[in-house]
Length: 477
Image (cartoon, rainbow, N blue to C red):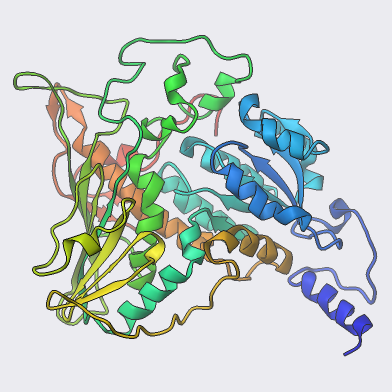
């Protein structure tokens, strides 16, 4: 094929899925092409909402040294935006994402959202309603209902989506998946997942509890930072990053690491909705036999136990998956090497089957097979799912390329998978919130909760359903 014909084929492939056909191609503005089209420059025009924290990874990897464009920036804290405003001086800068979308919609093909969890849904859905492809940081949303709505919206609008759990693009996830699915450990009946998080303050009095306030920095639009959350006075303890531990803003250790670690068994075992969940959480005592209560912030440590249907097993119709954080670790099967299973400080995953045990680290890396407690030196089966160029660091570019190719192009963590995974993770937080719920000074939610996944409802303790979908502050929808 000559070079001229190759260019024509590539251009046709670039416009895959569009309703526009033409005998030739010409450069036209994207607002003329309409929703869902990418400019014929072959570059994706992206806006970034949130310029600090993980955006320091997401933006450069998506921009890819100029193979694609950053055309607008948004952050409620000018201090967080300094680096990228300097790098992209021609990109208009906004504090309010709503104004950015209103004024720049015609110039934007896709949006990267890297903000505190409580703002994921409203920002993501606003961009998606305008037909913008979306890259949204984990844990996708703050609430279960929000995750379900974004999953449905992505399908309805035919958008290319990606959640920021980069391990889903890694070889380790695919390798561990292949080992378990090959039957090397037999029928899996138990999964144990653990992390060292939280590595920020939890289980302590918050500034609000202590009635502490601080002046709002001139660079911060505090009202916009609060967004959907109930109003409270400013304190530096909330931002940046440490918001993770506060229920109004973050989703704790589960939100930080659950979509990384639980992604591996979710995909490997093709988990559906859990049928039940129960938990326990660390206690703190203010005085002798006087348990302290911190309603504003998560506990120091939790253990959470899910039950799932297990249709692939004849012997075990129900599968148990347990999560441990705050330094708590699971009991390991008899004889297995403690040092090897707990080799990574970040945490790990352990699959327990009828023939053996498979343990792996973050992103499914470094799988170790134990049979009757003995570490096996065997050749593992090759991954069956295609590898991603760049492994975990190719996660953002995989999404960018998929946006150019069109809806239906595979991404490792598209919302049709990321949404249900996020629901499981957030289900764990619902259990913790219920466990900590008090009425007249008594804890009333310390029980096994039964879950109707299709209808997003706890069937045996109605109070817990308040944590499926929170109420937004007035003026936010």
